[in-house]
Length: 323
Image (cartoon, rainbow, N blue to C red; front, top):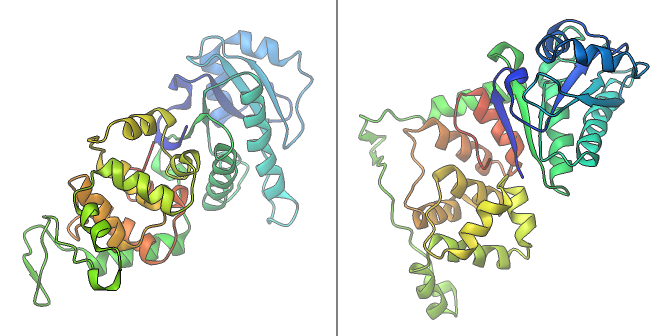
């Protein structure tokens, strides 16, 4: 199952487990910790008193009580000093220990806050990268739906350089919908014809057959050509296994645009190949769409990490890929 970044109150998440950014006493505090204890009720505090605290980088589990979640996984993040005192390793451990506990208790859905990014002072962009890296590594080997829950925009931040680079790329490439001409070339939202260089292949018949391929057929062919397994493909695409099964079993399945692009990213397709896959689903990339320009930015730079792409899409208030 995939990873999704959502803007919500973590105490309202209807999941198997919510993760609490706790202190070592486990007896409540401010921020997320205080909010979870308040929403869960005094029973949570009573159980926490029996746990004997928790060391930084470790995690312990309790019931969820009045929360919509069945469990609360308490983990203690590091206090950020200067990044040279093992803070990164401790923060990574928080996510790994929490995910291991969730798996051990058969949790299918888990919601994380951005651990240590509040009063503990961990730089938000670095805290986000640690979360994305550890969770995405876990999801490549395990089936679980994981949410990173952001309470408000101020609690979320990608690196300033990445944000400014993407913003500049959007400024350089964005075309307003009413703009028909730019530098003598026509910009259109309609799908454009892709001219395949047939004379460079000996298998003209095979190329001609590909013209009439459905999206599902093209996807499965590309998976085979890339030497990937189905699981490798849908996990890298941040796509749920059940959705992939629907696509595989229905030759005429029409995916959403984010789903089609998620598979293009998973398969590490070029821009031309991505356009071709989108056309099979009835879509096209457009320079009058910021979502499309951000996708183009990453593909043109050879960055096919779907979780990093989703970080950027979320920062620019765009739809996410997969999930």
